[in-house]
Length: 156
Image (cartoon, rainbow, N blue to C red; front, top):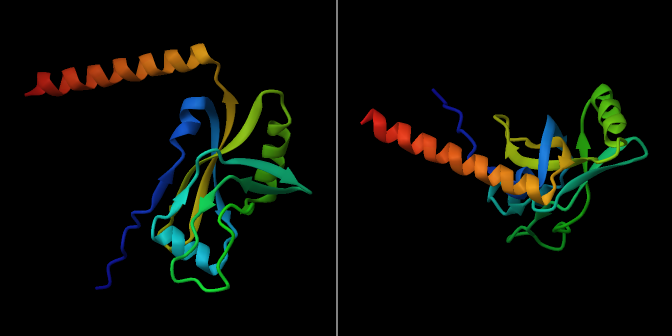
């Protein structure tokens, strides 16, 4: 009878896949205040330049911009504050050990709402790309796009 609505909120960090090679991904919960979730439901968030860091054994994300809620009053949130991420202890330990390796960092990839309406962030363990790697990545994507286009025309 009551059909669940599929959430259309899917905020991506497109820059992360261009600047970094993603080695592993995790889905983490986010600690938010009331007006933040309302802004996310309106799609008013950005993940450009977001990254994660450890502070006293807890994982935090910095650089996520959640715009102030239009109908919020004096209780409105700070748009660019650091937010705590929720993972299991085993996942936190694995991430902390991995992020201490030279050249590896943890970046935010995607922000979405799950079927229960909770905000989740996909984070990835990433290695930075050099300029020549980025050019190679663009060439591969162009070649793949051309092949897909050719296959689509061939099937007609």
